[in-house]
Amino acid sequence: MVKVALVQPRSFHTWEALNIGYLTSRLRASGYHDISFYSGFFDSDEEIVEGCKRADIVGFSCTSPQMKHALSLAGKIKRPDNHVVFGGVHPSALPEDVLKNPCVDAVVVGEGEQAFLDIVRGDLERIVRRPLIGSLDDIPFPDRRTVKQERNIREAYRDNGKRIAAIFSSRGCPFACVFCVSHAVWARKVRFRSAASMLDEFEQVVRDWEIDFMKFSDDTFTLSKKLVMEFCEEKLRRGINTEWGCNIRVDTTDEEMLRIMYRAGCREVWAGVESGSPRILEDMQKRITPEQVRRTFKVARDVGLFRRAYILLGMPNESLEDIRLTEDLVDEIDPDMVGFTVLAPFPGTVFYDEKRHRDVDWSVVDEYQNDMTRTVHLTNDDLRCEQRRLTQKYSDRLAFRNRELARAHDSGNERT
Ligand code: B12
Image (cartoon, rainbow, N blue to C red; front, side, top):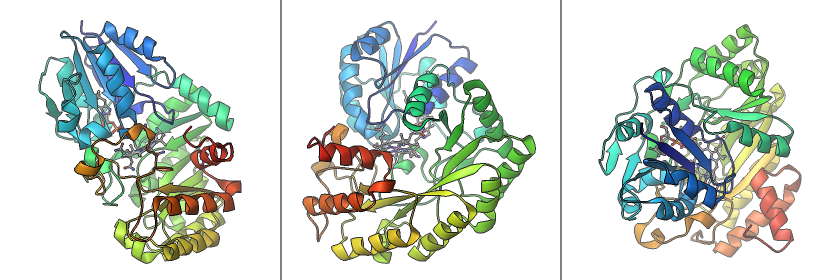
């Protein structure tokens, strides 16, 4: 029997490795059960290397910040008789580059379920791409036991006093915001699950893991009004009371939708506001207006929802005046939580330039801090200064990572 090990390398966050859970549930459904899982957050390098030594196939799931750790582990694990596979956002964006590492045998580009099953069955291609699965309802629910979800729930409970889990209702995004890398995995095609399938998983996760709050982690939950309405009506009909939150876009959400979402237990909405400057929003290809932001934040407050705003500084043409417009907009919409990130030229964004960024150590690049980004009008120091000023101004409602960084700055230790 083939022995498989899967690794979620270290990053600044811990979250349940649902991507790996999707791969392992597909393997189990096809009769492969000798699967182990390691997380760089919870397991030491020694435990991971030791555990992976017995595997015939070792898979690493990587965003850009996770690549360094993954390559260092793979270097210790690679043997002539095992097969080391890299998948996820970063390998999907730069497959040839990742394959240059002698410890990497194969890269999966895009959706992984079928590709990884084929590899486990013996496919030895170097770059493995498979067509997107037709219906998401055909994919087995992610295997939360193998990825040891309980460890993540415990961490979430420590930070928030709630047992929290994540779930996906869709794959892909039809928009083309220049700072986003989602398309590297999913192209621009969106596929949705049915409301019944989402709720079957929702119910199962709440029951099996005693969850108090569910996070829809899709790029945007509110792309299809019809589906959102169906989901909410069916959730009410089934009497599932667990509260939840989701990412929304201010242009695909209206009052009727937000009201039924609230009735169906939605308590938090998280929206990409990005900028208060119409010219910067246009540069971002975000396709929203400050007016839509104002309207949606007002309606969401009237409905009773907790509203989180994501703000992005550092677009190439951004000036202090644009940042003032953003600040005015944040003042006006008065979000309950706000995060101020700085554009990071991650591989897969239009800002990634092979010559300039090939040797960047992505493990220290975060959307909240990086020392590369500057604009035509503002140096990297100016941007950090503005970010710090805004962070101080809204210190009573900061997102988790802004809070962490503000604390590190106060103690003179910014790179924690
Ligand atoms: C949810 C999410 C998070 C959540 C995850 C928590 C949760 N579950 O609630 C949190 C908030 C923790 C998070 C954090 C960050 N995120 Co994030 N996040 C996402 C998001 C929206 C979805 C990721 C996801 O789980 N998708 C669903 C799963 C099923 O898809 P998947 O991971 O791609 O996996 C499939 C394939 O890639 C493949 N696959 C994956 N791994 C493997 C491994 C093997 C061996 C194989 C064969 C296949 C395979 O098969 C899977 C199933 O088909 C994406 C956007 C997107 N749509 O991808 C951004 C995204 C991944 N995040 C991004 C970033 C930048 C970050 C941060 C660095 C932000 C920051 N603070 O600066 C951090 C740190 C992340 C890290 N690990 O380093 C970028 C990554 C860019 C890059 N080049 O790496 C993305 C693409 C968004 C963007 N800006 O473009 N994120």
